[in-house]
Amino acid sequence: MTFNATDRARRQSPYRNTNLLAADQQVKAGATDVEYLNVYNPDTALAYLQLYDALAADVTVGTTVPTHSIPIPAGAIYDVQLVQAMQFDVGLTIAMTTTPGGAVAPGTGAVVNARYV
Image (cartoon, rainbow, N blue to C red; front, side):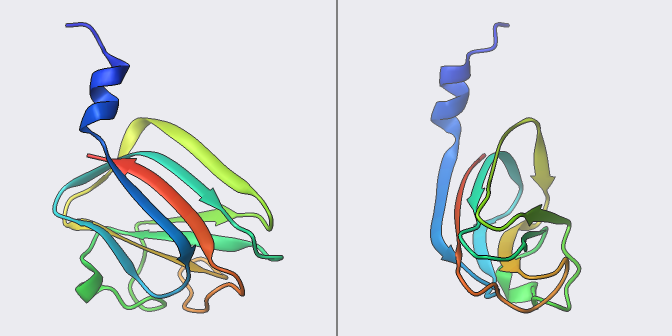
């Protein structure tokens, strides 16, 4: 079997949020494989993208422990095509905070683009 990047891209679903703050946002319910992430932090301080293997109804930002916390420096872009997808079994919910696992939103919302299956 030959790997075909075009076929893979066609089966991916896009996600876009232009103002992600600390309020949890459900990207998808059910099993999710995140294959691409692009996050821009326009704020003047470091912020953290929180990724939860949970439905939004089951996440309390600042209390629920995230599966992943990705630091995004002030004014920076985190852009990665994952060689091995980040796997979530229950679903994918995200939030942006000022500390890993915290509940406080950055002063300016992040721009998040993702592709998942």
